[in-house]
Length: 248
Image (cartoon, rainbow, N blue to C red; front, side, top):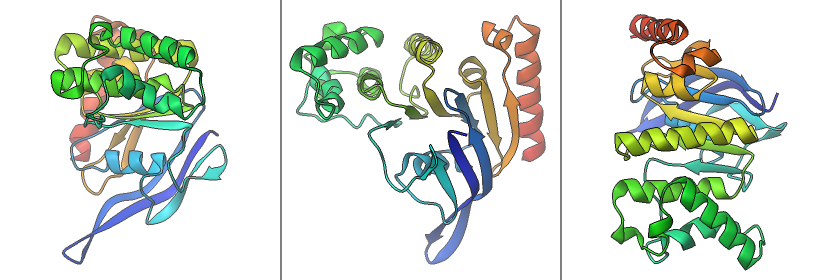
């Protein structure tokens, strides 16, 4: 198994009082899967994602990727956060190029890759704009392009479309889905939107409210992704609603 999460719990201290954020999480992810964490705010979805990416460590249990315990971030794994996290002194092009600089690509190779991903997120005309010259949604698209451009093994995404308008959101969702289908990247995606989870993921992991526990893992059949006029879509959506209602 590519990613293995065994007996993971996470406890924080608040005013010296222990707060259990996640409780006994067990999950296996195969290489090339698109997994979506779905659940209410505060259920520990982002906490688990950060531990999988190496930005935090479990209180108990362990997380392994390719057989190795995750202790720190890796160039083979990238994370797209809700915030934009761009360098204000670099243009859109230069921000996307940042990750490529560590891969020792030639200048012409970097230019080709950056142009490809600028086009993918619809920002070719803004390549030389600085973050302060772009809207929040545009800055988030630069952040997404920067993560994808490095061709990582694993892509962690924490509600990355929350700042985008609906039309752009749908466009980027389609691009991410096409990227996954063509390259079979392993993607772990955090969302609280049921429709988005059905559209993107091949498995949906549903979390209970605090403390976060996995209450159901649902396989998404291909026909469900064709839209709400498909019976498979309605069946999955109804099942998710039912699981969420009984776990409250």
